[in-house]
Amino acid sequence: MRCSIRSRWLAFPIIYSAYMGVADGARAKAIAMARTTPGPDTTTRQMIRRTLVAQNAIKTVERAMELAGGTAFYRDSGLERAFRDVQAARYHPLQEKPQLRYTGRVALGLDIDG
Image 1 (tube, helix red, strand yellow):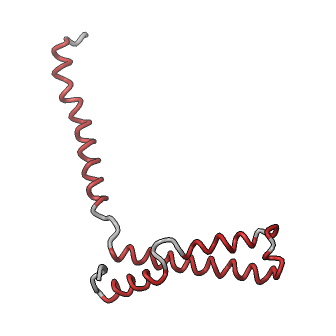
Image 2 (tube, helix red, strand yellow):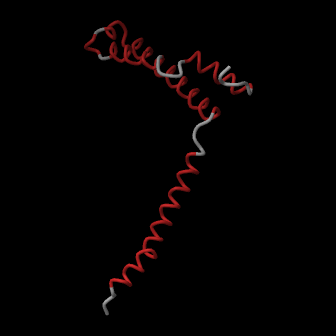
Image 3 (cartoon, rainbow, N blue to C red):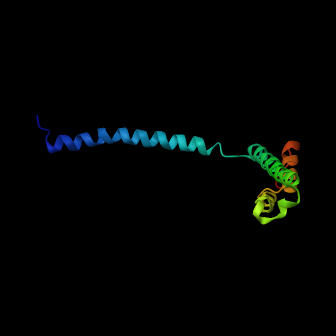
């Protein structure tokens, strides 16, 4: 049985209404996800973790150099470069001092922009 051209045209709105439903559902999910973007509490937890990881990475490399002794300063050891590279952790946002101020303000319920 063949469908006429007219019946095919009439079917398109019905068929595409399913796609419209999928698109509408995706839109609703995206809006719900966008509403959960990081706020002060999430940001402060992440920045605390960032500071702790940076501090401990630096300490780990320092201890590795202590263990290796004076030869750790030679380029061939690879530790000299690791020591230099790990220092960059100090300079990524949010640096330690501003992070401590930010976290303190959030903990005290103060305006974070103050």
